[in-house]
Length: 127
Image (tube, rainbow, N blue to C red; front, side, top):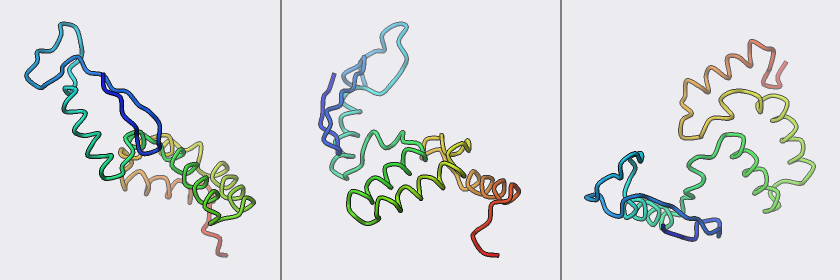
């Protein structure tokens, strides 16, 4: 087990059945990276200020995080953030793409979503 402080200041823990790559896999356990390999990746991400948790973040979670950060930094007013959230909830939240991890979203997903929204009557605000 390895415990570390992530970019957001929270303690996290990771586990692995193997310490180094040359250790054998225990019988009946799934194959995964060795603990030392995972530690190297985590330390590199921490140096680069990349959150290890954010790698599995969905588009909905990213939107909420972005709006919260903009509000806390006083870049947008609370009412504006509420309007953004309302529009997001009405038009985007229920779409399949928004519940996918960010790293899995491809350009084709975005184009398909945009096409579906146009077919359902969504417009860009111009008459």
